[in-house]
Image (cartoon, rainbow, N blue to C red; front, side, top):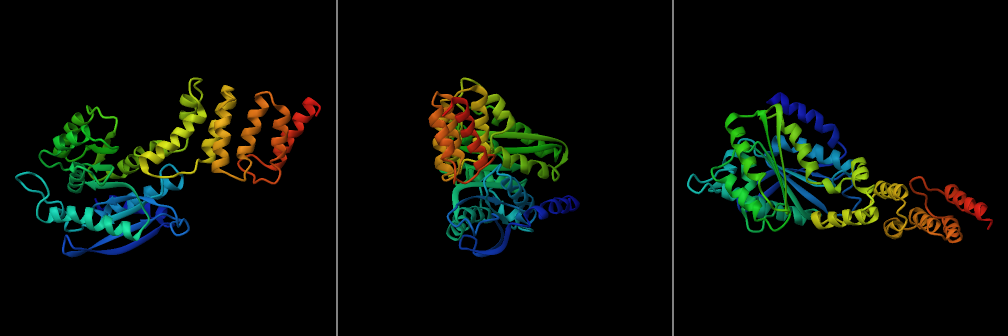
Length: 382
């Protein structure tokens, strides 16, 4: 186990080296003691002074923090997920006390009840006060702590939207309680569950049975993903599950892929520009994040319009481009293409010429835009 954790650390540390790692103490009234946490802030946290960030709370932070923080930093660097604040709670030697539950009703009791309130009322409140947090939160746990994270899902208004369960050691009734909570959820929830072929037998059997319940849930508000990794142990499955879990919770956030382009944007029944607008509206609705449309996504829609010859789509596209990239040639180019293909070559020529002095972007520069204007002038004898 220790060799595996050292390997995970070796993989993660180079990735997180450019992020800001802080070691802090949280004074807890609920616990009546001080707890140690680790906090990873996004790379450009200080520079982006107006930006707010989702929060990932990692239990077993003494060994799970580094792999989770590393994956968050890596995926957010490539803009597959948003930048996030990652918080690890150290529980070395006290995790059994922290996750204690009653043997009568199987709910947190004693120190477990106090630790439950510590996260919800002390930790998150202090994080919200100290850092620029967004109202989207994920919680991560492994075996005993994985079982524990699901107690938050049982509340009437859960404070976490995403739950990453790494080989949970399920309390009695937990499977039924979670299934019912997800079946009746009225706000968006993401639930991830993992085991492996070499997992602890009792845990694996309970998890497989749990999956059989969860996969029958019929609720459009729930995104559920289950993985059973081959030839992985109770500990090694963590290294494969974390990136898969994180990426699955942000599928719509990722840039438009080749698959999206071929299977969605090239369909003549789909408006590529409207798809783009809906994609970014969904990001705002689901994660509470205002995200600038990426140039990559604009280019994907541009290519789809050219391929399908759906020229009217340029009207939506150039308006969005002017909003998101004012002062650049992006909106100007799309507007010119619209006029060029809808029977207004002279107007298109003038729009291309208007790009002079605007900021270049992607493949668009002054020479390209003036060449486009000159080509129209030559073709039509203006």
